[in-house]
Length: 348
Image (cartoon, rainbow, N blue to C red; front, side):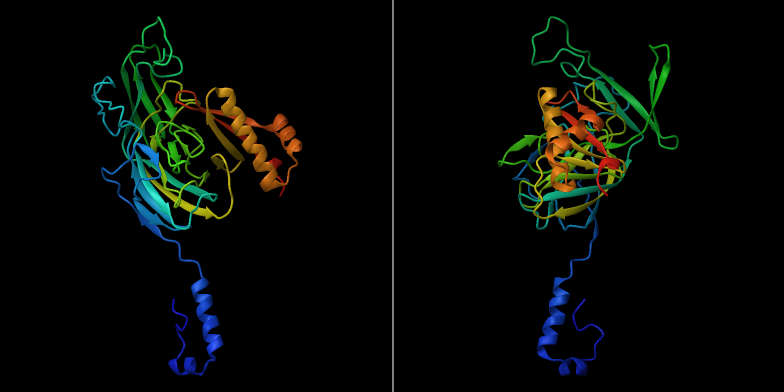
């Protein structure tokens, strides 16, 4: 809105120059009005988190984005498929929508992303038994005398009206199984540090493939900013998943999503964080699992000290008696663990 909106020209001519400058300055200082924007990725997706990807869209702090994501196979399967490997291109898995360039984001800032809504945009999802992959299967990294896991695709029907996913199990006594729908993003984050280009299969300080089943609609995520613009991306939609993604695949589904970004200038964090109605959580990713746990807990101690006024060993004691630990993933090249603390233990 111009500084002279609604004022008669004659009146403006009579105003002192200093006052006019003051009014103009106030107008220029106002933050830009937040926008709701739509982005259709089409076939333009990425399979790495990288500083060099050109922005899909430039947005501002406060803006909301409505977009969509593909499933982890890059939408390779159909409901008639029975196996994975004939159609799965391992160079094109975990496709990511974005990156979204957040104006003003610089290294050392924090990008806050509120997930406003998630909706599966297909009435089925897939799970899989993948050779040499999964917590309970022989892995390609270790010599084994036992055979690889069989190649098998599981098609889950999504009943959105009842909010359940249904799998026929004709070879099992139960006949079929139902699990609650709880859509979340398995892969979400910012461009990594060090000018690296890292596969979207690998989680780290920048977030990415943490496979944490608490990244649902309504939560707020926080990510370190390592590159100008943050270069935020997301994908790998899961309609449901148990803790750890034990079999190596969740119920993999493409999504429609709406999210809102907020830039926190000058606030440096080291690992992704999650805030929901009840808890705050820090997420660490590495191998072995014990070190991922340590990363998450140390980051939580740092968080309690910097934002909530805890003395270091009071924070450690608090976690010792009240922390919850979530195993987010135990199948990716880096394992992920979340350390959580109920908000009732935070100062008001």
